[in-house]
Length: 471
Image (cartoon, rainbow, N blue to C red; front, side):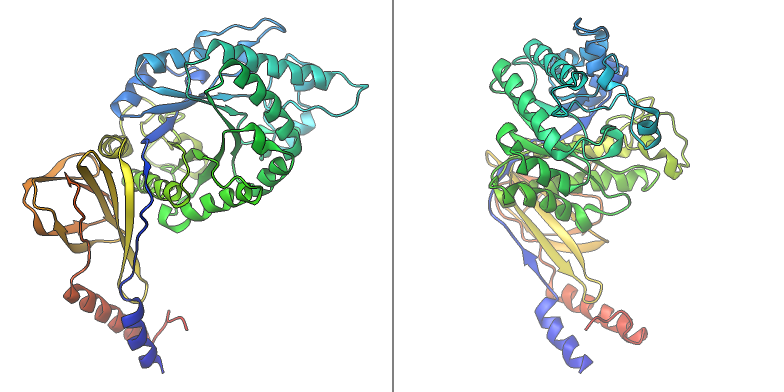
């Protein structure tokens, strides 16, 4: 019986390819920065330019704009959008956080002990007409938004209302999704009155789909131009869970009829306390491609940001779990570039502005199947193929009859002036780029490769007494 199963599955699942044909234009990988926290605007923008970052995400903190009640101005640290614009970089502005100069914005010790952050009391109205502190605080937040959006009208790409309101740290008083929807409505209408064409994002969700459901039930969908979400996969490769997380978030807004609402990923990344620099560089790029796949599957728009541009603090080569927040950058704390800065630069140089027209997944092996991928980006007669595999795989591919250049993940030329025809490519976990004219590439394994891979796994299973065989 087991032999029959093996023979059947050999012909049924040895080789599988999935393809889609919808297309959207890739915008390139953006980056989260922390110039609002006092980091050098000059060095941050320079590093962003060097990595070909098209857009940065940073805060304009309420408490820095209004250090004294009723007195609003832009301090130097809040002027980072000017530096970004001067360097040809777009801006996503996070409108956060609280302001402890107001009574309602002062957390209790119990709230802090429970994990809330000191400046993260979210404005909410308590519905009690006899109390005024909540209304004063809510109205002051909207006044701050009015000031910022008037000052920056026509100068920024998008706003994000708050950050991760679904977790305690950034929502000290545990405001609900319904509370957030009320805040979003007031923020959205205020911003749009000052800057009608700017994008306003709602959500900034860290994890909980229940929070999205609650805010959507309260009518949030009418007051946002897109849903923003965050996800981190710790040590996992993006192939394992990225689409699962994205689809899970989107399913909630679709439930309320917003199937064409853009979904922005405004935070995602891998820390070097979990993966080495090479793996981090691979995962960030591959994750961006799966995000592009997500967008074209549903015919929606969006933007992808890696968190973050620069490590949060000086870290050693040996990192523990407590260093997670400190080791997510494309650059080290002193702006020494990591491998990921080059991989992002190459990806953005190669595919930004092009349309992702297909993603092919080739499964190889028998038991413990792994996959190779070919992403195709096209524009104006030029095609870029991005190819990688979960483990090393020699692939025979058919290239068009034109001059072709092949680059590695860091943008180094592997081979140039390549002629068309059958070419053997050594695919690995590090994406490579094949730049040529707009003709299809065939990435099929040869028949001999398929048979060899099949028997390799057959022998492995037999040697292990059929352990790992799943009925």
